[in-house]
Image (tube, each protein chain N blue to C red):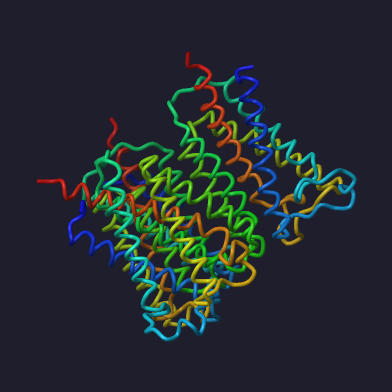
Length: 192
Length: 192
Length: 192
């Protein structure tokens, strides 16, 4: 592994905590609802236990992938990590806040912000690749979970096989942010 | 012309496509409505054919103006172009999303973001000048179209001679973005 | 004093004007309401006279504090001042626009943006310290004013001793912005 056990555990915990915070917003705003078939497992805050676990796992895996596939080309500071986490939590929250807005402009806004996140935080192609991987894995998983009756998106916003059209952009931005966090942890590991 | 025919055509197409996307948001949110006197012409998506044509024309003209009036002083990358387009599409979408919000804070937010767009993307005075030209041309045109009964803004948001008080800021940001795109195309043309 | 009388007066006026603009948004959106016990004093726009005065005083004091406590380490331009003012006015307006949204994701968004403001405008620890001072002074003052029956926040958003949970983040961003303005004025003063 390119990441230390401590870094992997930290990224898992950070992803799990962020997932819980974002999911609370989606549930509170009625963006998503867990269905009775998900009620058999313990809940943490508003989410079934497996949700933060999956987000944490995806976070740690994507950061490791980032470091395995491409060398780290830039210096960074802990403040960059704060900004990266803030960016994805803010965008996650925004998707809850546009719940009752027309889907067209809401979707345009999320894609526009995802593109700006890539421009501001991403290291070009590697960040875009991590964003695309996150979008494919995340959106596919959610489509399967929705099709399985585990949870659902509100009916007015779910035209993309049961999920909202802004979901790929949210996962893309998540992947860009995790790539950045991976770079931060990777550089820290390289220091003597 | 400072811009090649290909660049002018590309900017026209980009502006027309962005206009269609933004106008869909304005119509879907009830920010604007086309009146019966505009129904004589073919519609593309939610807009009469002349709307994307006018936005495309303004885009290509402003980019050409930018290059004629001031030399290009900075290097840029295609990623800057992505960011510039995302910024103006995001701000356009935001003006649709605040449709039912109090006009005061909605207007403050749009002006604040327009100022940040100028700071982040603009090359100082030339960008500000293109923004002001875009605001004058765009807002005046819309006031005339509204007065002619072609379309209207929702009654609760139209105190500025029939258009919303945030409209000058949206066009200003548009002008700043187009100036940036002009610089990008101009630099590409200068390469041997 | 590190700041000239003109700079202090300018910062006071800027803070007072910004406070009036932001407070208009809070009152118009129903985020806050002044109660009858505040009606004895003259009102400016939507605010009792003492409100802009207090914001102006806090602005000038924090800028002076910034310069007394830490040396100015970076060059800046007037455009940075425009961006700094735009950032805090935009965030202030945003807190009015989320008035009827679920409090959880609204709060996450405001904290995320405050963190980005610190990253983009702040000079590290000095900016964070000014932000924390602003948050403590501002939130404490508002809690006292609410407890005294001078004004109130809407019932659905006031779980933090009568004020919204996003209020500390808004004051934090305000403190970061004022620190930046102090640096700008300070550098201007140092020029021969």
